Length: 414
Image (cartoon, rainbow, N blue to C red):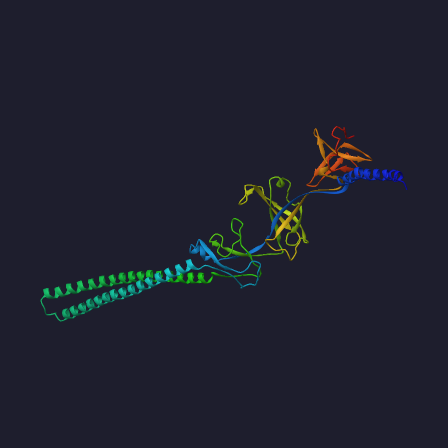
């Protein structure tokens, strides 16, 4: 075969390859940037993360008497690992007894002082009353002696007899006063003994209560369940080294795993969409294959600023309508709150929508040509938008603006 013939045969092949290179790639690009208008279910949702918690829990508190003895902050000295399963009576933790020990020492010293005072008062009372009784006996003896002398003085001069009678009368008066004084002193002594004795009893009771309080610093569970750590006012969990107070004495909780919810926070934009009783699909970071149905039970009316952030967030509580034994308090949840759903609607991706002079339109493929069609849009989510009018199901639209069609007229809605 001559070179001329080879050249003539090769030219068509080159042209075919060149045409494929120039136009074949464009066809692939067109496929890559187009999609079809689909008909199906539209879902508008808000997705926010949260934390699983129990709606019903039993607190494991420190002793109630820390308020009585004004122990404002008591440190947690020991705690069993969070998630431990305990039975009623099992050991949970221990509080630092340092402050209680100091009060016990003070109470012991006060008791010793009060007991010494009681003993001394008892001795003083015994001695005083003994002296008073001796004085009364002496007066009785003097009266008897004077009466005997009077009896033997019947032959004495009247003046002598009168003197003895007056002396007896004075002694009897002194005896009466002495007996009255004795009764008063006895009552005072008894009252003083009661006062000192009461002080001893009071201090002894305080000491016993402090010793019992010291024992109760070893915390045991009063029910069966799984231990979760109690939280501080800022949301952080209490642990070894944390403090409990007389106003909030909880060190741990026993949550009811059959009554769970997700506590989450929504921003100012999303909170406007979220309403009570909306359905929720709850997922779990720890178990990607587990999803539970839920319901919005509470939407906060007032926002709050979370620690470490200036953004105002609103608390949303989502009840878990289903149970799963793998779900535990503290797990991170993903909450898909279903805001709105529509069936059998036409939808296109958001990227397919373009606008010009407040008119929304799409680039629709019709055979070998491309047209700009005005569309009427409905609700949208983060991915797609509902098309109420302007395109048909399975119609092909572009996801990016084709070149060279900027000046093409928009076909208005009929």
